[in-house]
Length: 152
Image 1: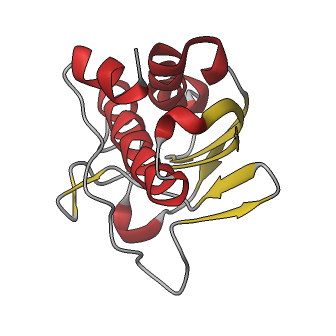
Image 2: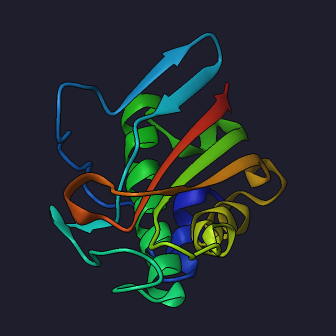
């Protein structure tokens, strides 16, 4: 079963590729590695959640925002690779979490992206990771996700 089939099976799909918010491309490739640009949890060009974890955003909303951001990253990877089934391994995921002072649950928030990758890619989706607290993210986003994948 392919990646798109696994997504459909859990009621999700790869969205239309979001337009870059600045002077960059959605992803770049070198050798057999593809680097995604950072993505937030936008749907149809609009952030579903805004604010900081620990104040305006709950842990559950942050987790969902990380999932949405990961779906947008998948759109970038599909744009670059042409087919998500070319992914042989997720090498590294970096998650940035807009955090209020004292909020220390960044790993639980970024699990929204990590667990989605493992669910749709199985062993290929297991990865190294950083979950970093940030004072602010673009446009008030609570989460931003980027990945490096190996492909064939």
